Amino acid sequence: MEVHHHSTAASHKKLNWRHYFWEFFMLFLAVFCGFLAENQREHILEKKRAKDYAQTLVNDLRSDLRILEIIQKQMRRSISTIDSLAAYVNSHELSQMKNIDLFLLGSLDRYRPYKWNRATIQQLISSGSLRYYGDPSLINAISSYVAYTYHLDEDFKGDEERSNSAGIKRDEVIDMSYPPDLLFGLRNNRDSVLQTESFKKLYATDRKTLLTHDIRDVHVFVNNKLNIRRNQYIRCEEELPELMTEAKTIIAMINKKYHWD
Image (cartoon, rainbow, N blue to C red; front, side, top):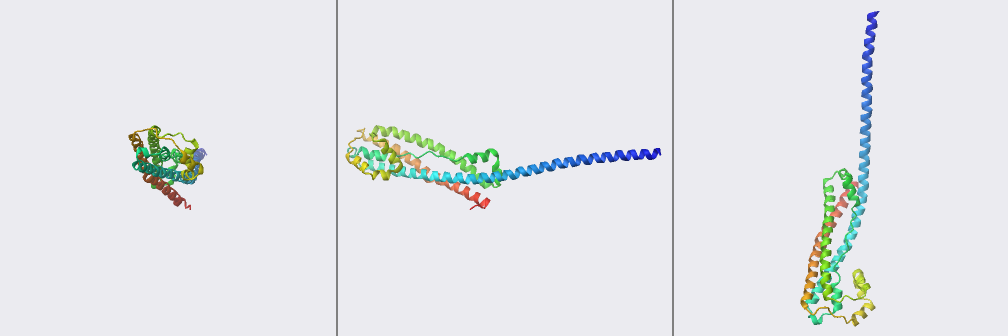
C-alpha cells in the first residue's frame, strides 16, 4: 500500500508540471497572437492612411499646377514686356522717349510668390508613411519634387532682389506719379486697361518727362531689366516645366498604383 501511495504522488507531481507548462505555453501563444493581430491591424491602418494621404497629395499637386500655370503666364508677360522695353530704348533717342511709354514698359517684372501645398508631403515624411507606397521610384519622385520647390523658393528671393534693384534705378529714370490704380490694373489685366477710354485720354494728354537727362541711366535701367529677364526665362521655360512634369508624373504614378482615373 505504501509503494502504491508513493507512485500515485509522483504521478500527480508529474501531471502538475505538464499542466503548468501547457498553461504557460497557451498564455504565451495568446499574447503572441494578440501581438501579431495588433501589428497586422496597425499595418492595415497605416496602408489605409497612406492611401488617404495619396488622394490628398494628388489634390495638392493639382492645386500647385494651377498656381504654377498662373506664375508661368506672369513670367511670360514680364519677359515680353522687357523685350519691348529694350526694343523701344534701342530705337529711340533720349529726346524721343516718352515718360509714359517707359512707365508702361518698365513697371512690370514681378510674379506672384509660390504657394506650395506641402502639408500632406510633410506628414508623409514625418510619419514614415512613404514606405507603405512600396515603390522606390514614386518615393524618389516625391522627394525630388519637394526639394525642387525649396529650390524655387530660393530663386524667388533672388528674383525679388533683382526686381528691387531695378526698381531703385527705375525711380531715378521714370516719373512714377500716376494713379495707383493704373499700375494695379496694368499688373492684373494690362491689355484691357490699355483699351479703356480713361487710359487713352491719359496717354494723349500726359506731359510728364523723364527724370534723367543722361541716356546712360536709361541703359543701366534696361540692363537691370534684362538681367531679370534672363533669370525669369530660366524659371519660366526650364525650371517650371520640369517641376510641372514631375508633379504630373507623381499624379500618374499614384493613379496607376491605386487604379484611379
